[in-house]
Structure formats: C-alpha cells, structure tokens
Image (tube, rainbow, N blue to C red; front, side, top):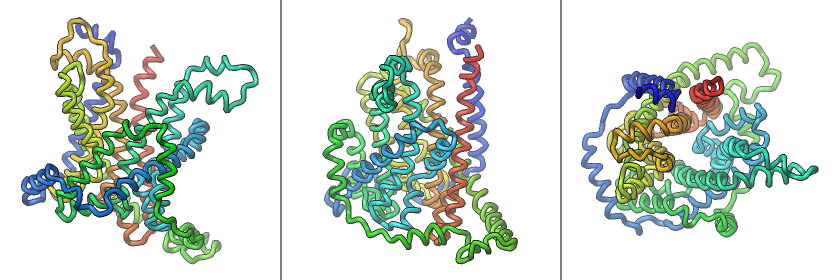
Length: 505
C-alpha cells in the first residue's frame, strides 16, 4: 500500500533513485583513483594556530585595509553592471543557437582565467578585474534572464493595446511581472561577484584576496582571521547595505575611486591577438606560409602532443576531482538540510546553522582549498573538501526555504523518519536539479584549483601562462570550456527525462 501511495504522489521516484545510485557508483570509482593522501606532518597543530588566529583577530595588521575592502566592492559592482549591460540584450536573443552557444562558451571559462588573459594586455589594472568578472557574468545573466522572462504570463502581452512597441511590451508585459525574481537573482550574483573579486587578489589584484593569501602563506593567522571575519561580515550584511536605491551612490563612487587606468597601447593588443596566441610555428610567418603542407603538419603535431600530454591527463584529473566533490556535496547537504528547516529544528538551532552556512558559502572555494592545503598537504583531498563545503553551504541556503514551504499533514512530527518520508521526496527533484547545476560550477572551480598544484586542466593552463605559452593556454581553455558545456548538456538531459515522461502521461 505504501508503495502504491508513493507511486501515485511521486511517480518518478524510481528515476531519481537510479540517478542517485549511478552518482554514488561513479563517485566510488573516482574516489578509488583520486589522490587523497594526507602529506602534512602536523595538520592539527596548524589548525590550532589558525583557530587561535581566528578567535584573536588583529584588524590593525593589514595595511590599506579599507582600500582593499572598497576595491573588492568596486570590482564586483562594476563587473555586475557590465554583465547586466551586455547580458540583457543577449537574453532577448538567447533563443538563437549561436547566441546560446557563445554564452555557454564564455561562462564556461572561470573569471580567474579571463583575468589571466586580460592581464597580458592591460596588466594589473582595474580593467583586468572588471572585464574578468563582467564577461562571464554577462553570459550567465543572458541565460538566467532569458529563463526568467520565459516564465512571465503571456496573457499580459496579449492584453496590451494594439500597436504597442516591442520595448514597451517587453517592459510592461514581461519584465515587470518577473521584477522581484530578477532583483533577487541580481543580488545573488552580486554576492558571487564579491567572492570572485576577492579571488582575483590571488593573482595580484588589490582586493581582500591579495592580503588573505599573503597572511595565510606567511602564517600570520591573526591577520588572516581578521580579514576572513571582515569578508564574511561583508557577505552576510549584503541585504542591509546593497539596496537597489543605493546603486546610484555606490556606482559613481566606485568609478571615481578606481585606481588610475593605464594608457591603452594598441600595438600590445594587436601583438597579443596576432602573434602571441598563435602556435609557435605560425608566429612571424606570412599567410601564404600558414597554408603550406609542412606548416599544417607541424601545427597538427603540436596540437596532438599538447592534447596527449596535458589535455587528457588534465580532463581525467578534473573529472575525478569534480565527481568526488559532487558526491561529498550531496552527502553534506542531506546531513545539514534537516538542521536548517523549521520542520525539524527549533529557531535557535536554525540561527546557529545559518551562521555556519554563511561562513561556508561566503568563503571562496579557492581560499578554502588553499587553507586545507596548508593543513593536509598538496593532494586532491583539500580541493575535494573545499568544493564540498562551499557548495553544500550554498545548496542548504537555497533549499532550506523550499523545505520550510512544504505543507505537511497533521500527523507529521519533527522526526528524521517523518522528514525523510514526507519532506525529502517532495524537494528531492529540485535538490538534484540544483546539485547538477552546481556540478557545472564545480567543474569550473576544479579547473582553477589547479593553480594550487592539483594537476587538473587549470594546472596546465596556469603553467602555460606562467611560461608565456599563450597559444597552449588558449587551446587548453577551449577544452576546459568544451568540458563544461558537455557536462551541462548531460545534466540537462538527465533532468529532462522525468519532464518528458510527465508530458507523455
């Protein structure tokens, strides 16, 4: 009888069971091949020193602290504005396959890799940070805003007076209906932009991340603890200081207090796009020589060696690391989610857990991995733990509200068995959809964790940039973007299967 009721109310539970079982089988296989060795000699002693520094922060140890905080906010704010300016027109044409493909490619490359590209042209200037955030965020805005606008009720557009221009129809017929969802998403992306802005400090941009890396690398944990507390407070109080009406105050201030922009040198830009990014055998050659048979063979041999020696090992390491992190994210989210819902816990426990979630989702994966690598040594384990903690914190934050909105029967009690039977099946499809969306993000973050020494695709990309082999770095970035697009396609197909069954019924 119970099976009949379960089938009636959750007709596709078998589909999610198969996906979950397949996921964990894949994770077990990947965990077997993952490098999870603990190499550090005294991880607990180092952790104790970090904890001591965190509870006794020294806010006066960092020079130019307020300037670093403001630069972090400025890069995030200007990057978001640039993303909106470019992303909104793209969202209106996102149904075109070429536009969708271009946006998928752009957002598949992490902001820090965009920063490494622009660094070669503009140096450590504000343009590098703003463009590195603005371009991938524009592609993300294009996709998400297009999805949100498609959810607008069509009746309003049909009710508009005859002859209404297209812009007015868009604003009054679709945009205003979805305005609360659009504003909420922009606020969420701004939180993400603050994390991205901080991460740019790891490559030398004058944001909080620059001072964080220096403090932790030198063992100055009191200084690092103060910076972490400040950054967490910055994220946690967004709803108080990042009001839409304050945008007209912050934006001019962000532009006014930007560091001096460098004089653009067209010859450097032209050299980068016409010489530096070309394979070595094409540099300095005429167009006629490009199409010679021996040149073509040399280019093919160069690409083959790069794919054999760097691309395939990097893809394998990236997928192994990402799958392990995805499985651990799944487990941690399921453990923490009951602790964050009013259907299971009293308010004081929920407030405490929300503070924990704030810390987990505020700290960038790159920073968490850097800290765990100091504790556990250079292996995949710090990266797996960092990715899982950050993404589980984000997922719990997003899923807890949906759990609170579930209408439960009068017989429901705040017990784990009631929660598992009544609440979890109702939210599990959305949970898996969000998990697979985070998998795409994990793939992107896994790539940049290679900059810490984990031999993912990002490790080889960073090595090519460091050795001024831009052609190899760009080829690797193309494979990185292609891997993200492929993962996104597979995830969408898995999530589309139950919808297709529903339509068939």
